[in-house]
Length: 456
Image 1 (cartoon, rainbow, N blue to C red):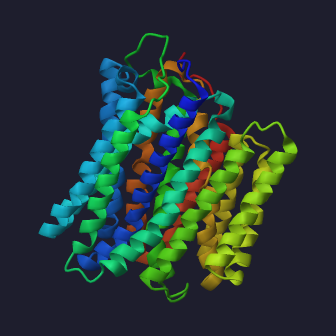
Image 2 (cartoon, rainbow, N blue to C red):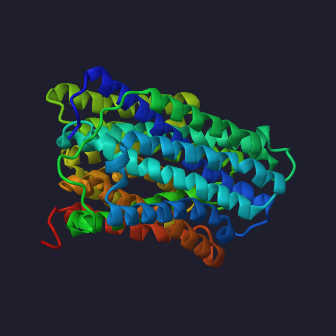
Image 3 (cartoon, rainbow, N blue to C red):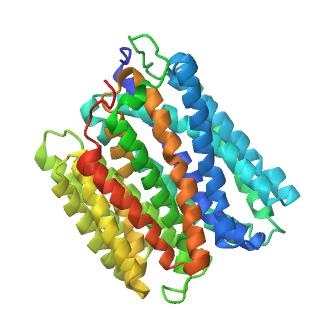
């Protein structure tokens, strides 16, 4: 239950949280730039370079295990301290992790960088545990998927801008710095932003979520079928998404694909993540309970049209026309989804499997665009899986959220596995790994989401 608050308070809360979603999207995708950068600086193979994702997303698992253990023994920590304090603590940890990049560069130690990423990941863990369910409960449950998709749209704005800015700063502007010094100034700047955001959140009045039921200890959340299957779905989704993004610069650099340089490839990485932004804003409209159908469908048409025009202006007409085909497919899939989160989820998962199979069996522009287009259909997966998984959990919502965030572990495991496949059989063939991710997600959208208690 949320205490009575004015509409202005709700608006301020939503605005503050969307800024938060933007920032952690921006920072997370910078790992895709760090991987090829550190690979060159420390002369790493693909597997060792993927330890960047292992350290960062492994922190989600460790942090969530700690959180879940505390909730089992003492009751849910977020229910005790409140979402606001949880978010502030997460921001402070994220700031500390960013600051640690300076001594890591100073000593030029790869292990130190991994430690800094681990601390940064711990901060993001707490942010994810607190902010996602808070955004979901900040209004009616029926529109939770729409609301979270809108917030995730701003998260994707960060992931779209991140590769461009990060690629420019690390490979070009500070690219001539000795050793690993190119990351010093950028990450000090990011640390200051996190600390500033902590101050802004502290000063912002957020509606307080209160649970009328007594805080419970134990493993209550694990009684729910939709949550248990949803945990695996989150593991597969994050693992598949991160695997693709992490390997993309190396993939686009292959002679049989496009032979792009790292700076050129980072622009396509931005289009990949930009597809998520487009899809999430479209999903926010599609999955909303907007009563005016004419306005709803007009807005759904306007979003991909605007995206087409922007891409045409920043790239060229040929690129926009190619991407426009996928924009139309994306819009068609949303219409086929009929505003149902589970139906839209499995349709998108099936399309991504087809795109991966096209990429695996082709080369050149066909393979390139098949991979880039996956971002459009990744768009609503996190939001839809998350809201379907915590639906009906009641007093176990935050505990369930910690379990879902724990499964971001997929972003640590699957990229590492894909790195090993790339080292052994080639970068191109390594894209077989995320196929299995989307196969499971399709199952979750068809059957796994159905709510019931495993244990009475």
